[in-house]
Image (tube, rainbow, N blue to C red; front, side):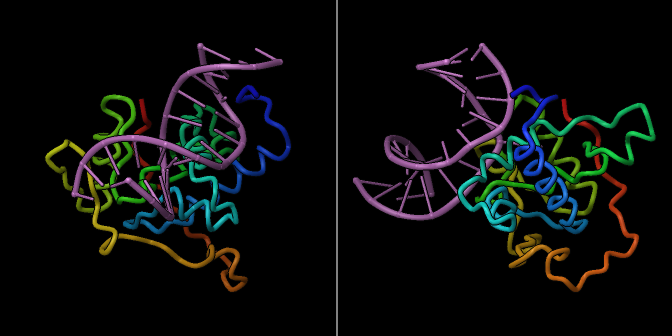
Amino acid sequence: MAPGERSEEVHIWYTAVYEAVQEIPHGKVTSYGHIARLLGKPERPRQVGVCLKHLPSPSADRSKNSATFHSGNVPWQRVLNAKGSISPRGPGAASQQADALRREGIEVRQDAMGQYTISLAEYGWFPDALPSESGLVESSDEEDEEAAADHA
DNA sequence: CGAATGACTAGGA
DNA sequence: ATCCTAGCCATTC
């Protein structure tokens, strides 16, 4: 399926992932696998990564910006792999994510292999359920307008 | 359209 | 601790 024309079911999945990622508190991080579990699909951490990979850049059109998910309103940088490190991908992408995390006060370390790692014990966010689904959160108007630079 | 890929992970060697 | 494998499934070749 082309990114532009997703089936109904896939679109719902993308939306759910983006909304879940938006619930990760500023200064906290979680894993692809945890997002998948929160959405009731523990076998698809990989598909969470796919969603973030396709996260569009902020559009020049503002009206569209507020209504669409993009790297400016979805804190993609707060999602790490199960080991608590930034999944290596394109050159430069990892260091960019590391910078974005440090920018929000998270301590990112680089090990001998050049891997960026974060202390999950200190910054991990692993609730049993999404705050929005616990039925208690009336979501006041709080947003994470930081976001970070776009990815390459 | 079939085959390969990958922002993943748990489990086993 | 590190390396390998199987399962995963939308996207890309």
